[in-house]
Length: 272
Image 1: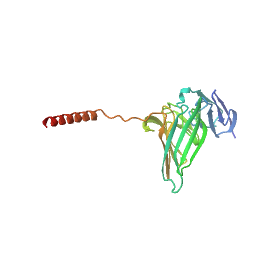
Image 2: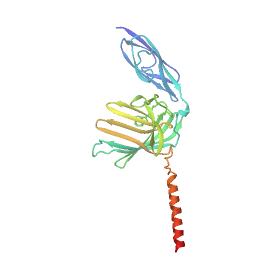
Image 3: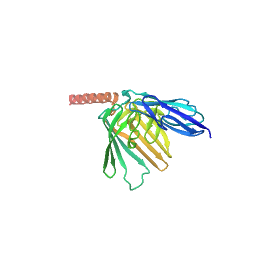
Image 4: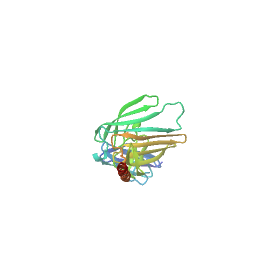
């Protein structure tokens, strides 16, 4: 059978962890999985070289079909510290809602993330979850805000700040997803610009929304044929709740009525 060579290299800032770097030999027609993993402070950009049979040159996790001898390069780019939109001491709390939850079973009521410290692009996070039986579960974990390398429990809780439509995000357990759009919605009492993505995974529709300015997750939902779970941000110290401002004209009416009453009573007193 015909054999072809696949040569893989990478730029500074990361490495190809699947199948590795160097030269590999494959039978013609073999589909080879590719995974490019950025280091802290870097992000994956694209694949270059002999990329004609790579499924998606902009995806860190993709594959190549071996129809010839290929030499490819994984390209990484350094990110600015400004891409980290959170700071030590920030916290956010998300409330759960469920449809189709099995009767009689306990369920999570809320989930709180506290960013204890930030070192470059690495955040130390304390997460606490309250269960319907009154118990709470807490633990600490680290999250790479830029690369998305994180504990599966914390998949997607924070991404780079100021991403927009078309940008790629890595979510542990799901892989590379693309931001599909941005909108303005109210979360934790504030009107926020959010970026969102929605995708299918194992017959489940998953949706993520992040606050654009900080990159923190403000909503995540999972919908299957029998079950829907949503967590939405209800409290935070990262932005102020919007204040409701009364329109000016009711106060003029109140003033006119008050003046009218004063005149009425003055006249009555004079008449008496």
